Amino acid sequence: MYANDLEIESEIKCPYCGYLYFDSHETLNREESIIEECPECGKKFEVEMCVMIDYRSNQNCKLNNEQHEWELAWWDKSDKRASECKKCGYVKHYGEEEK
Ligand SMILES: [Zn+2]
Ligand SMILES: [Zn+2]
Image (cartoon, rainbow, N blue to C red; front, side, top):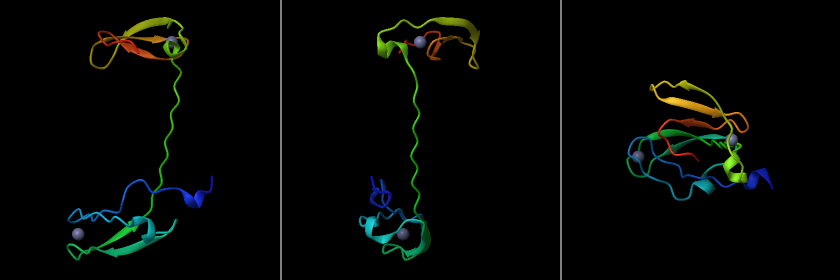
């Protein structure tokens, strides 16, 4: 994968009127901040390109056809019973469907 070929997920949007640019890809290079003038309302605003990739991997016994092993239960913040699987760390809240 070439870093420079990364797609920009969302288009540039005017923070004043909400005008959406449909050609954002051409407008910006990485690590550059530019001043744009909105073709709709005429206001100027700064545009920075942000690429955020967020991955979170969680284990889950159920996905592997294993049984959760529930450990100690406690009362969670909303005063519900909760318990945690000691194998995968999945937290089940009382009354909530098990995933
Ligand atoms: Zn605008
Ligand atoms: Zn588990």
